Amino acid sequence: MSDALTGPIAREIHSRLTAALSPTYLLVRDDSEQHRGHGGYNPNGGESHFTVEIEAPGFDGMNRV
Image 1 (cartoon, rainbow, N blue to C red):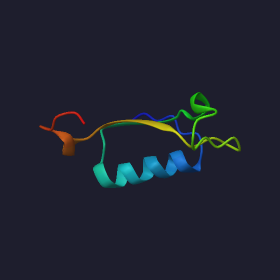
Image 2: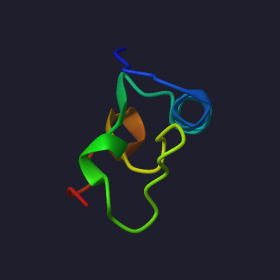
Image 3: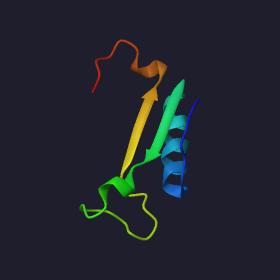
Image 4: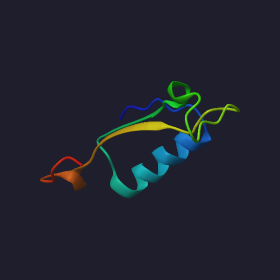
């Protein structure tokens, strides 16, 4: 399993997804800096925008979202 955890919110996202879906692959990446000036951007530490890539058995047979 891969991850790019950067702070407490990213770790919480990772933890909850792991507990709920038992993923075979999980990437949680903080993309906040790429959203500087956008709504919701937090200049005091980021952790406002994320990319999540996940593969889990529970998604087998489903179309991509």
